[in-house]
Length: 60
Image 1: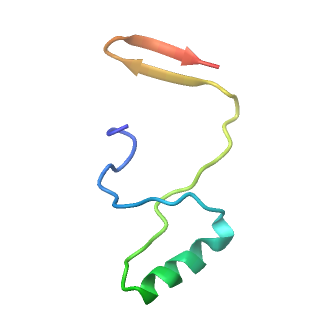
Image 2: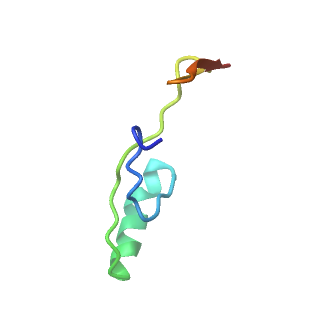
């Protein structure tokens, strides 16, 4: 995970794109910086491949 995600975030919220702007504006009223840092997309196939020094593992 440390190679894929920025593990330095203080908090992450996964919300529909339509409300992200509202959450940022609400955060600003409390003097909390907020920003959109990414998005979640549907995968073309339901398979996860993990490659490590211990081998390659596929999960379907």
